[in-house]
Length: 428
Image 1: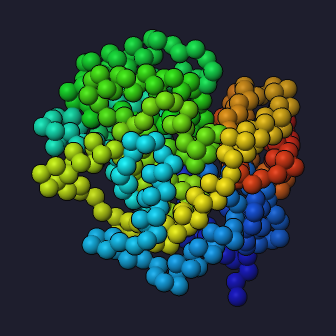
Image 2 (image 1 turned 120 degrees about the vertical axis):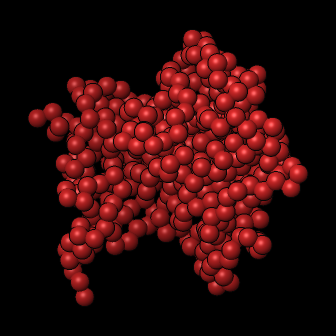
């Protein structure tokens, strides 16, 4: 039987981890088990998870009700193709999603990851306009500082300069970019920003199929919070210029911003909405693209067929996990629970404002951000967090928390203490 160190050596030799060099990989830590808000490593160390495994494990690890739902489904069948067949877990999940999203969203297309749900959304928009006799509407407008995934169409609507994909710019579809929304969730709306969007729409609307944006929070592009009123105004501009509005709720959905969806901070509905990550409670990969009757029936006019069909579309095990996760979520008082989480993080992170390297602390719902003046070295800083018994994975200038919703105040305090300690060390 291999030792833990032998497994780690094999990992280093064989596996390519995300955003990592094969010749000089960041340290990786072998997980033995996980439960609640804690990850246990093979050497016995226990880490408090501040990341929800990239923002998905909202109910914590090894939840008995989600476990039971998967086991029950497994005893029946784990997968069937979705072409020509259907099953109760998918139907029930679609029903649940339609019940908790804005009323106009009535049709659900399942896929197997957030990036693919964005690909689906972009294809929907293009195909919709084609059936409306406007085949030239093939392009998209999106703000800089946005992130929508790592597949090719999704990359084309990510930030082209400061994002992760500028290496591929020459081969990506050239989209239309506007400035990122001005930051500050309670800051007054700047009309000059809306004027910039209007100008772009006016000059190019005959080519523009849709406007895609992460509502209220631009996540991987800098954890930028902005006033939801911009979205209300952008909706009006999209209507004026015959452009579909697409919300990417993959990171913000299912309570993360203090409401069920970030869309709920507005009084409008997008034409298309992407969800993923926390959809299954972080158990399995599953995403969905929701749209209106207008778009779905527009594409389907004259026997039109939407040209997309992932092999594992509507996977029954994933749908069973998602149904259990959404049932759990429905038992929370999300505004109360997430407001409490926001307050705990804000109070715990406040001491970081005293540190010279800290530019700003900001919290919204279940998101707590410490923005530094200079970028950190992930390779060096990650093991230091592990030594302090926490799992926090910074990027760029941001050390942030997106913990499971079930986390305790004491665990939040431990995470915040570790962040303070690490930043203090970085001074010397």
